[in-house]
Image (cartoon, rainbow, N blue to C red; front, side, top):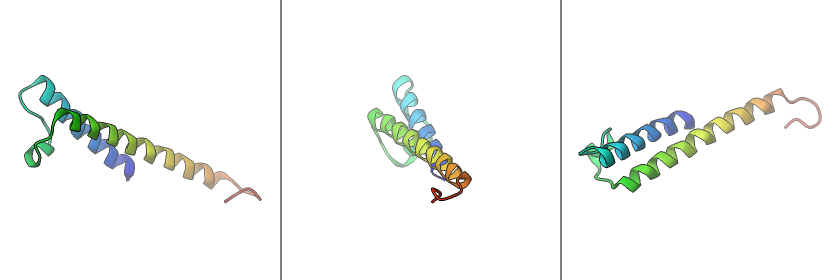
Length: 74
């Protein structure tokens, strides 16, 4: 779930940043509700990327733990 949410936040951040820096106005859903500066959109992209990576690492960790057996298994 974190990965999907992170991906959506990344897309909103990059669309807002590119639209605001290179075109007349920000794109996406967030500009309909909030008036954010370009730095905030870059921060949203970074936060979304962190969530996506966290979700992927957590999924891989759980898969690795599921394969462990024996005395060292948690």
